[in-house]
Image (cartoon, rainbow, N blue to C red):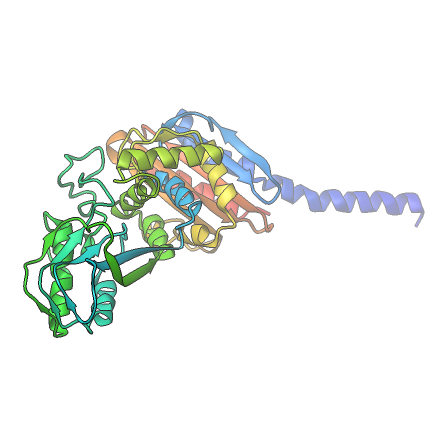
Length: 391
């Protein structure tokens, strides 16, 4: 066979191999997936491996973010020096010596949304050497302001939030394991530590209450909770209460007391620095005034894709907020995402990461407004399946 014919055959073989790949373009598959939604959908898909846009449809249109706001909150928290752990402290007035606390013992909250029986039990074990407290166990929540809800609530109680916002909330504001939410979460946390200390033989004369730690108090106990489980809880199951606690914690690290407004402003500044200009009223997405773009969400996803705790916090299909979604195909193994839904406004969002069969990592956001949320979810799932199947 002549060299010319060999070259021609080689070119034909190359075209034959390339043709199927072109026919399965992620861009075309994504377009078809969202076509039934018409102009109600905004889409951004970026090939993070190649650093290029695959598809952008109305990607810079500003619309409600709903709980995809939590992607931005997680990114902002992870950019902070304290983002490895949050501590709860036990302090006593000076001077202090021996095993008797003359006066009150203070339980000072650090804004730990996972504070519960394990942490307080460890503190009680560590303090079991005490014989007596002549005053009370006092719960200190002064790290945050006293507003118990996000800006959409009445400031006192919001059942949708899942608990009262406080820098010191045992078991989301309870006084006993699994008990009802208390009006005063700081006093309730103090009451639980009081019970645990008394069970270990410490004599306490006063009644648990809320208060503020005096200046110069001496630290004698510390309970530390790792931040990673908090972010997984916030992202995987879309925990609004955890998101709002962490939002106030962001603010409190700069100025006390920490407020939702100040924390949301920090999240917005960090999001802008990551390529996502947004308007935020809170850190959870409960407030419909939280607004941004599909392009912005994808920018944040791309820039945080190598953060293990961020990536693992996004729900897998079949778990968390993606339970019952995307079927049993490649997307179930290859995709992770964060949902965002406001049923009253017809808002249904999905943003996340999918690894294609070609080995490329795709970041995507599909934001829908003014449509039936069930129809929107089906289209979003088709997008994820298309990206997971990309060759």
